[in-house]
Length: 328
Image (cartoon, rainbow, N blue to C red; front, side):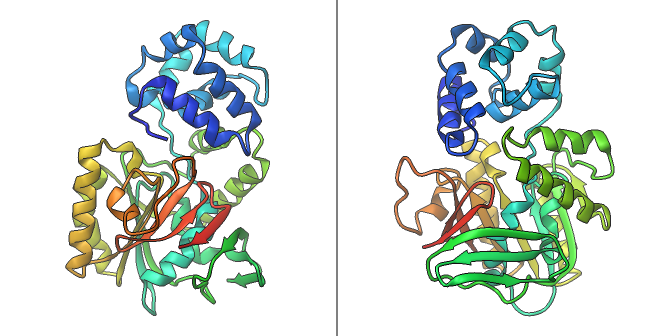
C-alpha cells in the first residue's frame, strides 16, 4: 500500500490487503473509501497520518469495538471531540511483528558468515525483531516441517515454497541495536498496549505472539537510538562494527519515506555493502525499493506482500506478517 497515495486509494488498497485475514478491517476500509463525510474528516489530517492502520488503531484505542459494525467507527470519527485526532497525530504505526523473523532468519543466514553478528535494525520500534536467536523456528515445507533453534524457546513458523536454503540454527548475535524516530520501550505498559492496538482485530495469535515477544525483549532490552534512519545509520554501522560483522535489516519501514529519500536510502545501503561495512537484508513492498524488486521476477499488480532482499538482490516473496516465504 502506498502511504503517499490519496486517501481513497489508501483505504481501497488496505481493504484488499486485509480481505483474506481481517473481515472487519476489510469492511471498514472499503466503506471508508466510499464515505464522503469520513473522507472529509480524514483529509483534515496530514497525508502520512491518514494511514488506515494508524486511524483504525486510534479508534480502537478509544473504545471502538472491533470486530464490530462500521457504524461504530463512523460515529466515533465524525463525533470526535479531538481525542482520536490527537492520538493519530501523536502516535505512529510501529507494528513490531516478531513473526516476520520466520521469514527474515533464512535471509540472515544467507547474508551472514559463521560466528556472531552485530545486528542493526532500521526502524526498530520496540526492537522485538532484534532477537532472532531467542526463538525456535518451524518452517513448513513440501517435504515436511523443518525446525531450528532451542526447543524450549517460543516458536515462530511459516509456510515455505521453493528450493531456498533454511538454516540449521538461528544466527548468533553478539550485539543488537536499532534506530527509530520514536523508539518504544518494552518496559512501558502504555507503549506495549499501543503495540497491541496495532494488531488487527481477528489476529488473536499475533496478539499472543506479541506478548511473548515483549517478554523476550524485556529480559534483555536492546540498544535503541532515537533519530532519523538515514542520517544515523553510518555512525550506527560503525558502532555495531566494534562488536562483529554488521548485518543491517528492516521490514515494512522504508515505505514511510518519500520517494526521494527511499532512493537516498538505497544508495546509502548499496554503498555500505560495496565498501564491505555491512550486509543488508530488506523486506519491503514491491514498489518501495524498486531497484531491489527489479532483480527478481516481475511482480503481479494484484500480488500482496513483501520482497525479501539480500545485499540489494531479491531472493524471496514474503507475507507481511511473516506467515509465508516463497523463494524466487
